Length: 281
Image 1 (tube, rainbow, N blue to C red):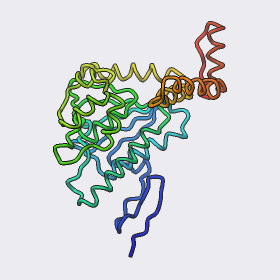
Image 2 (cartoon, rainbow, N blue to C red):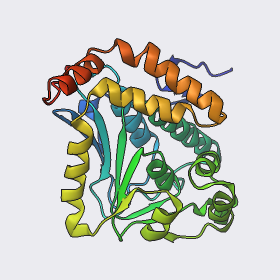
Image 3 (cartoon, rainbow, N blue to C red):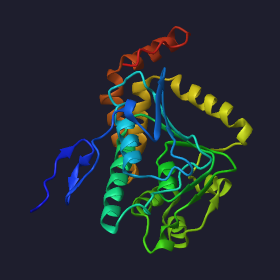
Image 4 (cartoon, rainbow, N blue to C red):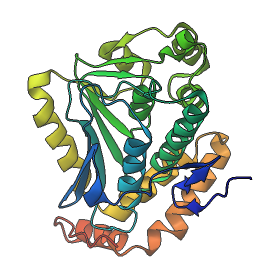
């Protein structure tokens, strides 16, 4: 008999006789610490020792990020790790070949949620980020790393290639360098990742906390909706010609940004020579 499937916000919950766990609520998370403090939401990978990704952990990441879309007070999402490794990639050892495709499907869904979130995403890498972990880092809008960070897409050594990395990396580092990273599977340092554009800053470990606080303060000092529209304009222009990208950015500016109270407040603050008071709407 053909297995029935049920669609949820996270996709299938029954496939070929396998019943996946019901998507967890944030208060039920096991492998991701989830907290909201003021205008910042923090998701901390916490599956010792190497934060290997399984279906449950991927579901928690997806639910956590997706739950923030209706929270206008949250201006920034921070993704970091509670273990010495940022993320060692997908844990395939516990999966049969058939089940391995299901965890890859969960990975794709989580990455789609990360790509679709309207809120800026800051990723902090203070250890190895391999395979799916390197792809998680690559999806950050802002990435801060320490010299302890290392990045690799080693899937080619296992007889496969990183399907998501193969699509994401050319946008970030260009096709030639993406081919090099994927075809060799080499491990690169934080400094090389900085040179390639995979990370924004490399800071000493003893300066990491202060740097993260500084960046968070810089971003959250601005209007939440304006941050969202700026991200939309920048990422939405990727793949378009320069002319089309400018046209789309101007449409967002004139048709969406101009209707915000915060846009008017910013102009009034300049005229009145004072600091703006954002209402985040």
